[in-house]
Length: 516
Image (cartoon, rainbow, N blue to C red; front, side, top):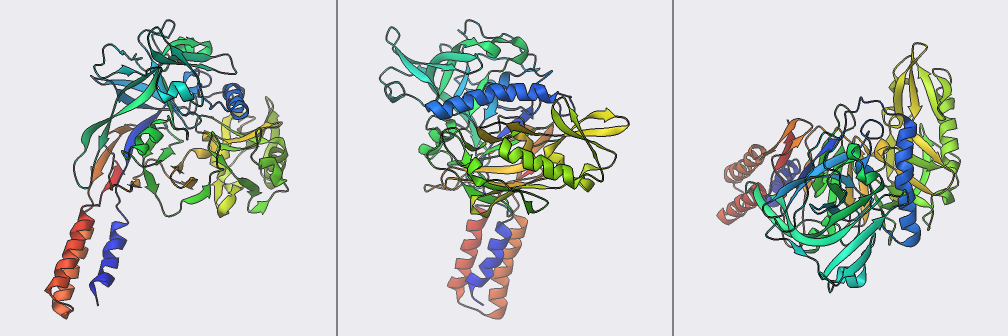
């Protein structure tokens, strides 16, 4: 048997451990068990969606303000991470948002930015004078001359710097100027240990806030936009070959939440991919049908078609999930019919709810969202139902899907949590699979220039992330290859050497990330 047959064993083993990407820890702003009224969640999402729709119509990319939500009312389901910028580096808490492109943080010269936060985090302010590597973006930069999707860019000739203004439909907004400075992250290449790396990026330094952004109880350091635009951090880094043009997240839905955000592609065999709708400012997908317990609902696919004011968007900044009325009504009717013998339907504060005396997983049906390319997003009852106390001794569960009379279907954290979600911008597709986000993940980051990993020792939901090289299985395979060739007499010494060299190459590309 030739070497190439034996190496199939090594390849099979290596698929269990892959090169890993850049990781950022995610934290939920308040514990999951903190009760929040659905109306409060809808109010936050309505404000956000006004901005999304405005962006679709006018070409302005949404810039989320959900990070400023009140933790006592609408803080549920918000995820944030930490970034380090400047020289010396300073750490900032920024909300994760796939619905906007730009990273911005508050400047120390901000006239009305909150000085403290009710979210239990310490606020930091970026100091362009205190950072030895900070440079204001000049008026001659293409950002000013060409404009940036998502903001009104202006030139301040007195100081020769490019300014921006974001004004949102709910009355909130921010303004400031663009800065170029260092962003820090951990990078690993091959079997090398994590190395402190940095790259120069352009981001916003906000000097003025309005609306909800001024409220102390809702304050954070800024917003981290992961949209598809050219000025997003993902686009800036990948265009220079520093990171892949793909990122992934896994948002933990239970306990204290948390999860992980990866600058790379999480690999999992069950991930199903669907193509992105081209030339859209958001992550638009082609939703084709909805099924309950495997039975397709009678819904005209045209209600999901992408246009100026229609379509389906994936947005981790939206707490709930929103369906157009033509899809919402058949879905709720089908669910209610399926549980008619086991649950009592009631309307509570305008929401469709059910009184249940047993496990919801035993009686409620699964819901499948079916997309172009054959990809289905299976949503379990635990994912589309929300528990709201007890009534007459029975647990009350309410449907988390919300109805919109017309407009955009938005898939928010309600359906994205407890899933690996991969945004593969290089191949213009999004993939997902149900997953326990407290478990290990395998990540591959491959570019045309090299294979590499961005990783580090980070805390995620009070668990340690350790980078462990799973070398023993590969070593055994490589040794077995050599022994079998020697005993059975296949080939010459050169063939044995080639097999061992191939094994060493595998060792150089094996790593796994575990959450312990």
